[in-house]
Amino acid sequence: MNKKFLAIASVCIVIAILSPLASYVYFYNRFNATFESYKLQIWDVWQENKKLEELKKIEQNPYLIKPYLVTTLGWYLHDSSDPVSSSRNTLTIYGRVLNVGATTAVNCRLIVNFYDNVTLLQTLEIDMGMGKVGYWSDIYVREVIRCDSADFVTRIEVTPKWS
Image (cartoon, rainbow, N blue to C red; front, side):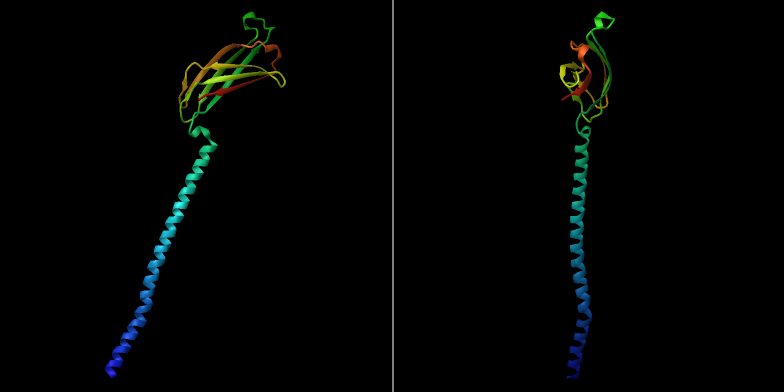
């Protein structure tokens, strides 16, 4: 009986020693697997958030995904009292139109609006010759256009348009 008791006691001692170790290994592996899963989920959420931030930047800066024209224009309005008779009631417009967008601009034109204090008197459209303005390229504009209401104009707005 002494041998039997000794064998049972030995088995109990081995189980008592190995049980916490087995539990530790089991729970350590489970915890790490769960932690790795959470880490991957957090990484995925972070990546998605980063993509959304980039899209937001693109929406705020339209020239990153499409054409965008900017101008450096000057003009001179010749009224009906101009000393050069051929220049009377005309607008001379000159300068550059630059595409700073990421793609080519087509059907480029300038819309010229003539106003008195508040009323739109006349609208003219200037075709910029070339049908396309490529990325970071420019067009030099020099046009003389007729403005029958030149004597009443107090404000001129020039807006680039493209498609």
